[in-house]
Length: 526
Image (cartoon, rainbow, N blue to C red; front, side, top):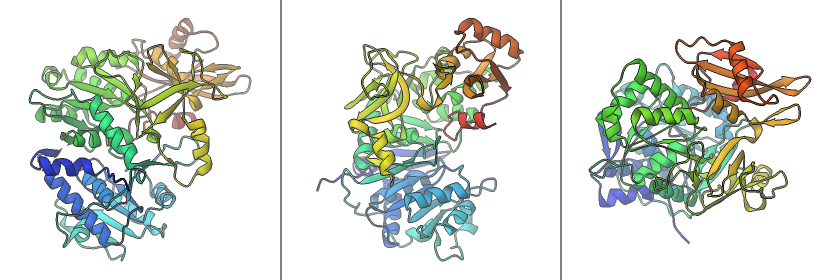
């Protein structure tokens, strides 16, 4: 049997460079040897509690050192990791535990403001198949060191008690499920994408090659992690890729511009990934506080954008301010996630998500799954080592998404003669106004060029005559006083009569997911 386990990316450096720093959290530095030892003890504890190869174990934790230790510990035990969004309600958590058939949950205790363990207990109580809850306490919280009265709840200290820092990683095959990532569920209930050890390992290796020049003058790789690690991008392109490189992860539990900038300087960060809303917030902070970016510009080598389309104007603004190139990529949970990237050794084409990565093919197809002509819009489909083996327990949804050997993304894109991919819009976000297809991203890009507009989201709203009408939800720039009438008149001058927004709403901020994507569903329902 061919053997492959994603945890090898930590084990490798623990063997050859155990004293190299793998994780930085505040003033705490954890080496590869220490991280591997922690993961080994967790794996041993899980194995002793009955976890076997092929089982599913959930993980609920923000960007703390607990996350990689538990993540790789679960993998070493031969189980699949089911990362959970820390913003879930107990009801949502219970759905994910039940749907994934998770038999255990490793949960960070949380804080007084967000008591994760309390929510986890409520969820586990209604999911009989989840037999064990392991609480990872806050540092210094000795009151959490004792076991809960409930028989199926233990602390992490109790789980690993008596186990050494050595453990023989369970021999898993390349096709074994390593991670189950749940899609955002924009239509219907979220689905669990089953990603194999081959999917995740190859995508980490490929991603590492895409950011390999992002290091400091000593050749050290370091990445500031503000996207949540339960999200596919941070998990693969930062955690797995940088640990594969033998680099350091600077873990930040939440995005805060002042904290991020300070961490970049203190830890000589060479790489960062953000979503457009983070870039916008960072630029706003720099301007409002007259922050001197010269020190960071000399350290930061590459900034990546992922998780949501990056407006071209925002990209230019960041590059002009920081003097650092933004490299945009594209992927989905179902593709591990990276499928396309603006490669560092080739010129970026702003507005595109680059070209397919190593051993990945993409094409655009029409509604009959026939390839469209170069430059014509069509649904983007993908095949390669990165594509999931399917949606867990959903054969019909899997068959629908994996037609004719290609994964159908639901994204509308164009591919130019050089193979650069431009995402036009989500297929399900497309607005059908009076028989005309309108793609919101085109409108959002143009709205962002208006000097009074900071952020914009365009949605379709029901209309009795046209089927759908176009609405723009806009965040004004500070001190901007543009009115709805003025912005509508400007849009009318920039767009054809069939697609300029007729309806406008001004807000102080746009609703976003934990990973920074704009929640258009929430905008539609408000």
